[in-house]
Image (tube, rainbow, N blue to C red; front, side, top):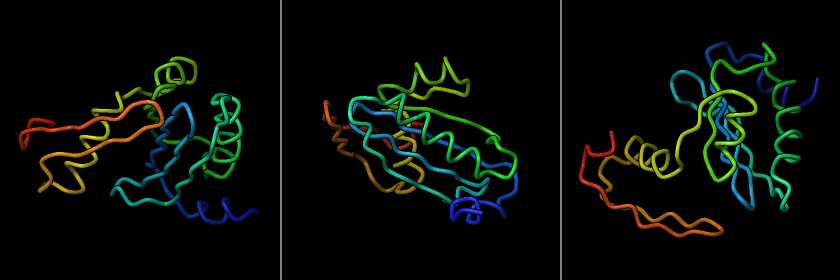
Length: 130
């Protein structure tokens, strides 16, 4: 049993697999129903995001106790296409970033998002993101 499989073997459903597919990198996270992170990784995709995504999914799905997540969500520039091909849901990255900041830091009124191709300043009124 590899280290990833050992790490995830005690994880019980439901668990959630979130994948942010960007033009430069892919960020992957597995959360439990309480939002606790059980696994996270950052991979450069070197211009081949779907080849890298396949490798990531092969490793992660093999390590999960049921060989599939309870829920699968994608975001990022490649997220919409990935959700159409693989199933799961697509969440616009501005919405996902805003929801994450709102959940983790409700006191924050503005955030800055810096991607490889795009930089954003995300102002909002408290509660407007929900």
